[in-house]
Length: 400
Ligand SMILES: *Cc1c(COP(=O)(O)O)cnc(C)c1O
Image (cartoon, rainbow, N blue to C red; front, side, top):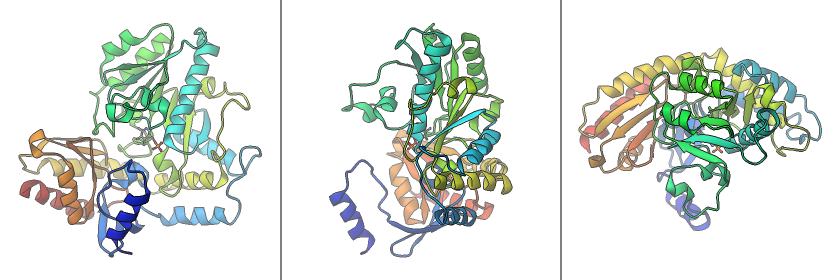
């Protein structure tokens, strides 16, 4: 079957909850992907940062295969030999005290919300069921009913209520609004260091550090959603590292699974994660030995290949090169590390058509909202490959 047939099949039998570019990927390696007709593409999205290590990194494939030969899933009814070392190594990597493993990002979010509520009742002594969590406008924390309950994007919510109560939303980047929203029932402030889905929105410098200070003074937990910004994407291990901020809990996912397998987790303080007692929370697949083995290797590869430093260095280079493109369509190019958004003017008539034109040239990236193209290549990309990509972006933005 060719790509056209396969797209038709997917559209006939699959729910249309996505609008993918019309390309069918059959194979991938490193920074490249190939379609069914053998055309090669440079991956400039990295599965929204899940493929930061590059596709099928040889060490990760090897770790996965080795674990497949031993044991894959056990449930948490028993210990498994990968679990303890995974927890220890993730604590060392994050500087946190405890870990609770899940599978997808939004499950880590749900876990952090439960932990924060429990902390509010048990430690802060908020009257039961009155705990509030403050989130930010433009947030993206996943797709469960609870996560969309505090989304400000109507498309994510419209027909999906009734919603989970207990959330307040303040404008992203607005410290006064945060201060004013906090009341005695506030359990936590949930924040993305940089908002990816919203269009690579960067708060002004000092925002995270000041928010940390506000939370600490008010006895409010700070939860950093590092699912997309974590593991080197922004040029440091975590987005919060740019401001020396240590949250009480961080949600992790995407690149933690090395682009091989879904692994997520909450890493946090003993004061929060130590509150769970047996049976209160769990996941059949969370912490399974296959996921743990892959995640452990993904952390080692990040360190040993210096991927955070690489992201910082190449990201600065890419940002500077993209900023030299002379196009009437470009409103702003912003980002940190290999996490860059190119915002177009409304007159450019949407980012989508530029992504389609880039696809035809062998560069795969995706618009986020209407007017932003997100550039987030695997962190193993080379300077020469970035140069080639910039040439394509430049030609498309000056010719269309
Ligand atoms: C992707 C993402 C999530 C949700 O992760 P899933 O694995 O899709 O559930 C949550 N928060 C942020 C910041 C994300 O980028």
